[in-house]
Amino acid sequence: MIQQANPGAGYRALQAQIDAAVARVLASGWYVLGQEGRAFEAEFAAWLGLPHVIGCGNGTDAIALALRGLGIGAGQAVVTVSHTAVATVAAIEMAGATPLLVDIDPVHYTMDPDALRRVLEDPPPGLPPIGAVVVVHLYGQPADLDRIVPLCREHRVALIEDCAQAHGARLHERRAGTFGDAATFSFYPTKNLGALGDGGAVAVADAGLAERIAALRQYGWHKQYISDEVGVNSRLDELQAAILRVKLAHLDSQNARRRAIAAAYSAALAAGPLVAPRIRDGAESVFHLYVARSKQRDAVQAQLREAGIGTGIHYPVPVHLQPAYAGRVAIGPGGCPETEAASREILSLPLYAELTDEQVQAVCAGLRGL
Ligand SMILES: *Cc1c(COP(=O)(O)O)cnc(C)c1O
Image 1 (spheres, rainbow, N blue to C red):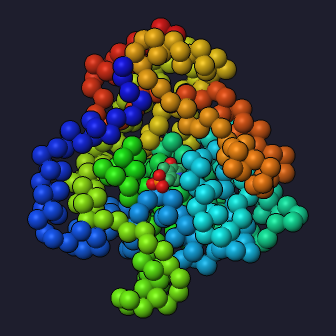
Image 2 (cartoon, rainbow, N blue to C red):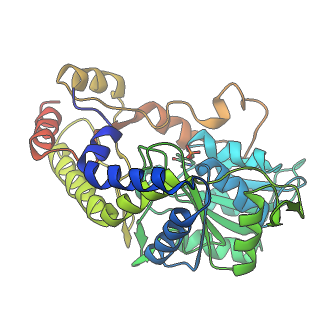
Image 3 (cartoon, rainbow, N blue to C red):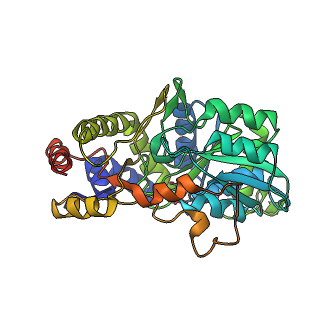
């Protein structure tokens, strides 16, 4: 079976370098917030093109820390999408804020700017004022920032870019994560830049904001043992930082490999029942996931499984319909019909940089046989 994702292959491809990095950390005697973490933060900042990166425990914490750093919390609503990892919405509630979920554009699966405009111009009654937008660059492609950035500026709300699926994506030659007030990343093992455990980071341009977020990730300490405000414990450990330094050096070439595999799939899908994903004009996707679409999704998935091709569904149940959120979380006027339709029709094909040419050809043959 060709797996949909394969973090073990990612380790094996760089095993000698990763093992050496791990041995170096083990021998150093320093395991949390040390020189590996600082070096990774500096290298990731340089790669991204922002001056400040703050490592943290995971991508969910990164969103919550960014919100708190920007002063967003209780008594404020935060707009995001329902078609995302539940983590995005969980993080908004962790920060103490009230999520407001809007629909997606059905072609690119990212936030519908018109749905955002409607809630900014005419906020749903009974909600606290909107303080921020968390835009999700889903599946590896930037959301419609050409429209979303000006809307946030016009309405004076903060913009956080959830880049957990978009390490290295570009819009008009500019990296996703450099458009808003803060960018958040996850280094969960299956992400484009994946640790061998949990990890995350916040990236910002503003030095004061960076200092506040760095304090919040460790009990609110600006100075050791003195909490100036209530913080949390969400640190990136030295082992993960050292592993991420190895992997960061290969990220751009691995993203290019993902794009090449995606192009092969799209060519194979041209005539079949699965509709290939579309990339926005001016955007370069890093194809965290290759998500095709079909009204016969479940039958197609079964047929591919028979052919030895593993697939996934990201995500099968929109956040606003999940038991923990249904009937409780606020949604924009008109609801989220495109989100609900997409969740019934989407299918993620195998995609990771270490897929061999033979495996890619086998998937393409399976797609042509649909
Ligand atoms: C993975 C992911 C997160 C959460 O990251 P964790 O490291 O698992 O906490 C947040 N948002 C999106 C869009 C993700 O894909």
